[in-house]
View 1 (cartoon, rainbow, N blue to C red):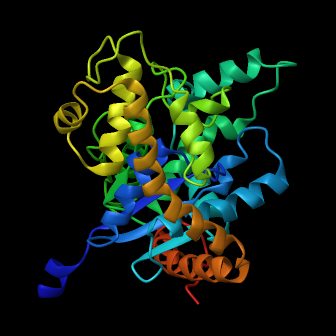
View 2: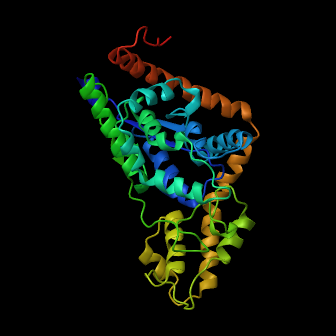
View 3: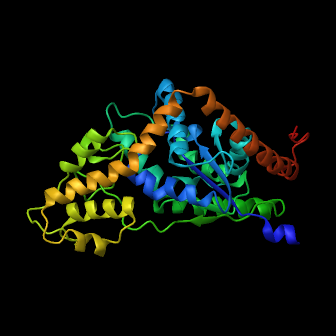
Length: 344
């Protein structure tokens, strides 16, 4: 009983390998993961299988996967404290997806908000690209990612809550159809303060898909690039450094300053009372560079050591595989399969 009380809860969180990570990714996700690895049994997946549900270039996918791993490590993820792995390197994700798909009503998938939005964008795009069924089944694969590790907590953004509900539904359906097997995972939505918005359009989230290259601050941008982007950030015609709804541009810069310095909004307002926007932007740039430049330097070192990156990912995949095998042996047996997978 004592061992059970001391057992850490299992956290599973995954992200697609999108290449460069921006400030919003760092504040809303990676910084939280670094804290969580101290208190939980953490599995961090780079989900390359999800990345092929939309048109992509294979060589870029491979490059982005290494870039993603190097940035996570540079931010503080520790292979001695967590398991970082590539989704396709762990057997069972696709297999569990098929079993769960057979329990999932297709109408439930067709109602998913993200599916409808992405399908619309594809159909409206150049040439009216066809919609692959992988896009429809994306949430089932996400459910399999979570349930194969029997995760207790899943850090997700607000836009993934609908997918989390599906994961819980499918876990319950499997448990009811066969016998209790899966935990019902809980969404963990960390309190990260205000959202980080585009520097060029402060009414839209900071995003890699922003067509304006000056809109996003990437962790591996050089100091000169970071400074240029911040100094050219959209503000308003006023001059007061104050957080207010009608001052979305300057409010976004205050949020950025608060995020990278841990100073409160009110403290920042007091510090820059009576000062002009130019002086404040310079201070924001200094703070962002101080936060990101050590990460960039570490990232560049890691990217020159592919053998080390692969050793970390191999070690993480081995740990993930051991846990996945235990779950899949139960799933296969309960689903009626003969010769369940071994955990050799």
